[in-house]
Length: 138
Image (cartoon, rainbow, N blue to C red):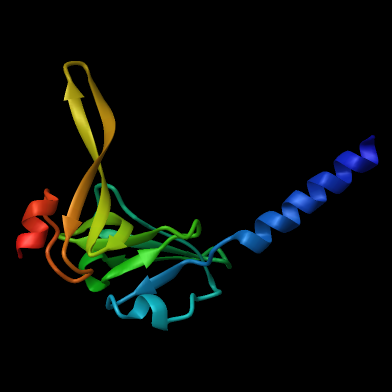
C-alpha cells in the first residue's frame, strides 16, 4: 500500500510540473502569441496598493517594474492579465469583444468583501469600459 501511495505522489508531482505554465511579460498585445515565455521567471504579480509589477526569478531574485511600463503579463498559472490605468485586468474571453475580470471590493458596514466585476473592450488595445454595449459602440 505504501509503495502505491509513493508512486501516486511521485506521478502527481511529475504531472504538476509538466502542466505548469511559464510566466511571461508582454510589452504589446501582439507579443502574446509571438514571444516565448522566459524560463528564468518563476512568477509575476501586480502589487495591490503599490505602483509596481513584481517579477520573481527562479534564483530567488525579485525585480520590480512600473505598472505602466508593460502591456500585461502571464502568471505561473497561465492567466493572462492586461494592465490598464495601473490596474491588472484578467483577460477572460476574446469573442468579437474582450471580456475582463477585475478584482474589486464591496463595503458592507464593518467589513470589506472581495468581489469580481466584469469589464469589456472591443480589442485588446482599446479602452476598458464597464458595459459590453459601450465597448461595442467604440
